[in-house]
Image (tube, rainbow, N blue to C red; front, side):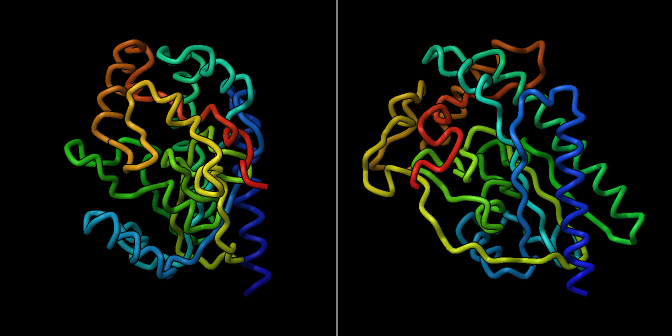
Length: 257
């Protein structure tokens, strides 16, 4: 059984890596980061208690769920550099990366679903974004929180998840009814502010003034700014994105060594 689980994990990792490499936007990314966690991990229930009853459990997506796959597609340095040029203006390169990466995450999940179905394995997934309540802005499946539970990273002051490949990128996840090898990652702090108070770049860079070291992220203020940005790039679709909080020292790697 363990050998089968290891083989399945290798197939999933290889497929994600291959699909990113063959994408017509492959130059936008560094190597994907992939993690696995049991669908019965108690922190999923804890997440529901913290985020509210509207947040789904893996079994809500797939009744016989046994494992959850989380993956992070980190942006290439040139995407982040483009977005760091001006405080107010969101770079077109970042806006396009947001739209294309959301589509790529959906494509990865669809391809994985097909490959795993051939092995008799069922899957379920939520979209990369726009799966939240438009009033409360509470997500009913937080890919970032799932990534933390799967051991990919930890939350920073900016409420982005910082992985060992940084926070500049996009997260996706997939639920399946098969076992995968799980190696619980010990909690690790990757945010310099939480580590020793030495960094506030995300607060400084936030054009919406939605971040403050002494209070939670002002999600409503942040989202109003994102909708303003969306008006600048209507030809790309719904580009409600900013990313100015992801251009600091934690962009490409954990800021805490």
